[in-house]
Image (spheres, rainbow, N blue to C red):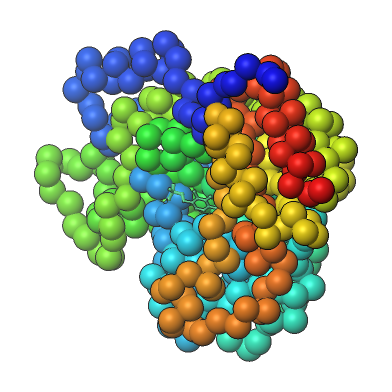
Length: 386
Ligand SMILES: *Cc1c(COP(=O)(O)O)cnc(C)c1O
């Protein structure tokens, strides 16, 4: 028997430079509306790519909400969304009063199926709110072709997709808006936090106002201190300076973070290749670059219904796991009660939520950890699959 280990599913990677960055902000006197947010926005934009413009916000949910507000999607409109995603992807549609239309996913990647998406378009469809499932990029050329043909807006939920690229282009740059999350277990963290990304200067200007009460001028633009006007409705979705300082420091280490994730993922994938009755979700083409958020393993055949038993055994051996996502969103109580739900409506999404396990590959793990996970996982499924 191998020596037991304790491996959390996710753990924020905080080092001395992160602590120092936050303390420097606290040693000053500007805690919000300051230079850290501005620099984080510029640095994130140069990371994502030439055409990106960024606005820091308080979460990915906030970024998604302002994206729909800015695009003026609302009552009477339909938005195509994946059945397999975080509730936030769909809540944003609900908050602006539009109707989410759920679409099933692909079995190999977990991403929304473009053909099913095209079939669901009606004269009321105004937008597509997609998610890059666990950091595996969607088929963006095909989705943009369909969206352009029907003049649909495209909102990309990139919460798990820092570093995900399709043909070298970072996700968030295909559609009208990209929304990122800096929640503690995501690729990089600011505690809570998010980023709104767009290629449109107008969209960014309007989100800048929306996230700050709809106020018409920044601190620097106020000739009389404290005087401003509010020409439009707004919210308070700002990020603080401490958070932005942490985000900048985390972003600077991101290449190293992604390198470790990729290497952990590849080594675990090799180890699980011989585990019968399992399927690993990943991008199938070399030009589609995964961000390696976690490894989703689907248990097939007679192993499928034993998913929770496999989870218990992994957890008992000290391996932290998660489920992406706990249920298809249309099956969650709020949506089921509002729109109804038929068990066979989204068979692929159901299979992934009910029969898959998310294994950790984050930078808190080393090659011995991956060795251990591979060994325990393989022997567990072998034993239960007999
Ligand atoms: C985590 C997550 C969110 C929510 O992010 P917050 O920053 O916590 O609001 C949204 N979408 C997806 C796909 C996520 O995984």
